Image 1 (cartoon, protein in one colour):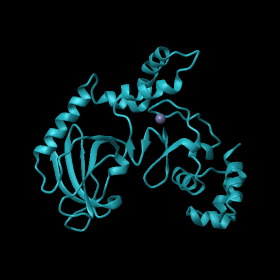
Image 2 (cartoon, rainbow, N blue to C red; image 1 turned 90 degrees about the horizontal axis):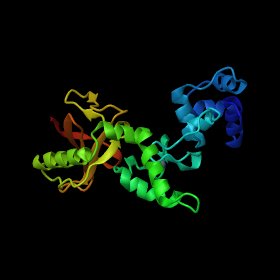
Image 3 (cartoon, rainbow, N blue to C red; image 1 turned 30 degrees about the horizontal axis):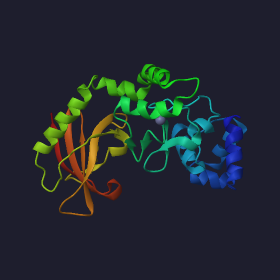
Length: 254
Ligand SMILES: [Zn+2]
């Protein structure tokens, strides 16, 4: 099916008039009409809104031009198993087992292979064969390529340990010791901090993966500590649930 037919069917299924749909995704009725005649397709931002509204992937809205593959475990992605961002929108890069609540579930290729081998092995495909296959193919996927950029062969784990040591040595008042750092997507943790002049500033790149964690705040139950770091910096902030009212505590170049 083409985008025009898909959009028409979804609109009908949800019992929306062209006007009602236009209002929900902030376009004119004429724009909706042009999509349905096939004159135009929605732009990227509108596709995101439509994806959220209809609860289908952008890939599906576009007529499934690509077979989506989880970029961590290699599983083919259907809409029902695509991962979600904390705001409910789909993250079409990953399956819901590899990425959930804004967090990547695997920081170690061997852990992932152990899990996958159990599902893949059968009478004709031995565990050893499955393991060899995964060891050859998974490092080609985006997620593991990016992990390798940070350093191979245990260097990455050593780097994480070093960062954890540096963060704990800062002795931030009211913050428990950091014991683990997870890979976090920039767009999820890029909070807007308020400056004294009333303006806000964001420090991170939405498309970069950082290491970080969230910790309880010892003296204020309504707030959490957020820790973020990479090769270049350590950032510590506090915020309320869902990242509301963020306050920058420390930004330190490494
Ligand atoms: Zn996956």
